[in-house]
Length: 146
Image (cartoon, rainbow, N blue to C red):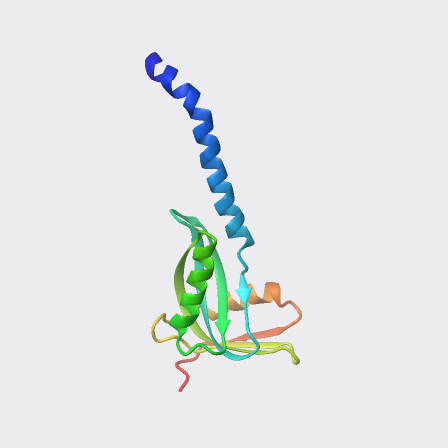
């Protein structure tokens, strides 16, 4: 045991510092990652977890919407690129439709995605309410939009 201690002691602190710097960088990226990016007008939206690889316990729920997206997976692909650029991982939680009227300060969440399933509109409403605290936000539990 003493022999192992002689070899490990000089290397232990520098290794911990390298690990700590890596974790701090990843955690800073996660904290800085925007919770919501919502476009004006009618758009497809999706919810996802963004997390540090191997640390799902520190996941952050985020919302993204794109008015020009043909499919909900297109919205997810954009989110995935954004997260990977910051060294983070993603997990899709579901999708739906979002109507954002900036002038009336109103947001409506409804519907579902065929590929990702239905997002938890109530959880999405709570996330958005923290950011858009001057908006009225409605979350409906409807079916598919035609």
